[in-house]
Image (cartoon, rainbow, N blue to C red; front, side, top):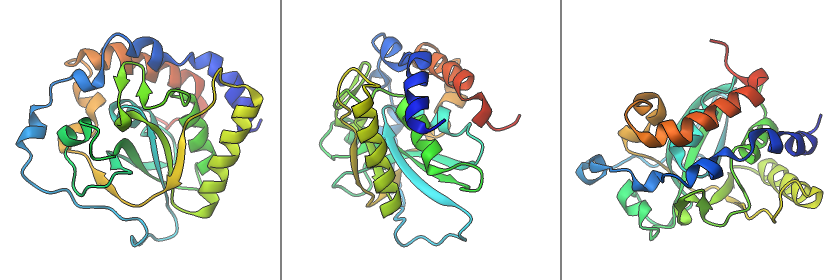
Length: 233
């Protein structure tokens, strides 16, 4: 079954849980004292100059709060790492507090390094389209702002063409009730988020209500729908 057909079937199964639950509590409402205490600069990752062995590939995707997206993508078989961070902006080394103002132009995003022999960019796009609402501009549930925009930041022409193709086909099919507003733009740079944002769900599931109310139901739905793509325990 191709991505378009799967998307139409899986949309109903997932039920866009993040929207239903996101209205109850917001990622941006959570206290982040660590952001104010940050004293070290984060190292910029520029994939146009990074060297890889040829056995891995990289995808940079933005689809809402990175606490949620990291908790999902890191479970996929073939994903080597999923790092939360900031991309698509116009400032260097932004902090979480700065990004939350919307003035840096950055989106909360994931930098995903994966093994293309185990999982394809097409499959990553499938999970991307199905685990957020790509029709809401600068918003996911109760998380509002340009930092929560939907975006594919492509690393090469093939990624660009695939993202544009699937976006057009999903719009044409009527898979969503409204037009998709996902931006598809070239990747420039990525700045890893502060340490306390990494593995946030794993480290805070029982301490933060957002994890219990928003992320956990979304992860559970994801695991049921994409059970054939998960890493083996």
